[in-house]
Length: 566
Image (cartoon, rainbow, N blue to C red; front, side, top):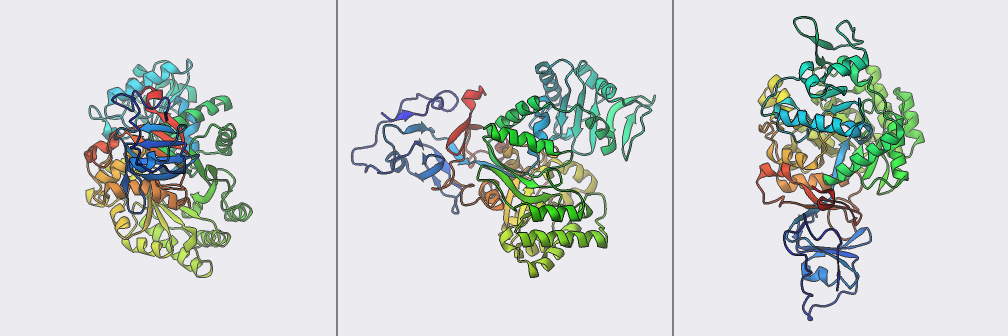
């Protein structure tokens, strides 16, 4: 008798009995190719070029052997083949995030509370207490973004120090809201030496009440970084445990691969922790990371050029490695909302030199690009460089694209560029709508336009400070246009098929991995996710609630809901 896939065919996955179905009729031809495992009786969204849907998958080693009907796939099994009856469940390719700040999040994951999916304030505060109960006495508890007040249906007013003192009287607490504000309790202020007389080293405000006492609200980077920057460093052994924890949470969410793009506060120590995990065999996720000023690149144009000349544009393998340069390629052309994009002639010339070297050396550039004026300006430089150093085959990528114009989309496509789109825009949409108006936010970013023009694009998060990490929140936002408060603010939405393709095959293209990742097709790695509900048939508002039952990477099960007790 064929062997059932142990540990997976009962409980959470199957609702009925676990008996193996009867063998196929004697007339069924026996295939001479034998699979190590087969998944049958499912709804398999292959996300191939035709978005074909089939019933079963055969896997041999790390790769997909075949897809097709139950009858065909069962013919590839022998007495040693493991058989998983999906009982009608939907299977999708492993989800890939094209732009993430994984190494930064990993450091404090062990003491971090995530409110990404929380809908009320009471639950959010209860989660703080639950986290503190699992930590050593006096340990910091942190919430490092991925949420907005508008998602709390019961009370969306700012936190106060008095409120947070009552919730966590024995642990320093730091809560960060994107990159705009922070909220702390009294122990956090005391631990960092901040009081009403503190003078900030930069723009920001320590909010005070009518009596001059600190309220616990910190406005602006100088204010919240005065606390965040003073939180004790994570010891290496704890960091390693934190890395293992975040990795398991990510595969439990259905993520199977990501591109890490460095980020604020990231140091070489963050990559050292990543390498330790890789060398110890503790990275089930496929992780690729960019060359950036957080690992081995300085800030000046000469330092950047030297790094681009001395490092290979790609290294590693299909599991792990350095890939691309970015996201903050050069500080002289950084764009920020609320400030004009007016780089000087020297900055633009420096950027042009960086771009020329990158193109000449075969680098992909992954460029942070939000503002329309910045995008138009750098495209002009790219077009000039392209005359001497053709870049079409390099797949340079514009990341975020929140204000990109239709003309700029077309110009980028003519250069062979791709577009990385992120749900961070949806999280920030309520605040932007209040400041800029709903009409502006309705096309931030213009996903539908990018898709309809036939561009190469991928869907991700930009987690974990300005967004969460759950890929089904990204998919839900792209399909419904709704922010975390349930309000539809984005009109430029796409179909479920387009969103799923972008989060899988589209992202594989951006990573130059489309031949081995991104769809459930023969020859590709067996990266796939079994879902608890039908992605194509449920109400669109339910997409955000989808949970994986099984996550598989390279033919190996790395998560089961049953084993996790969820």
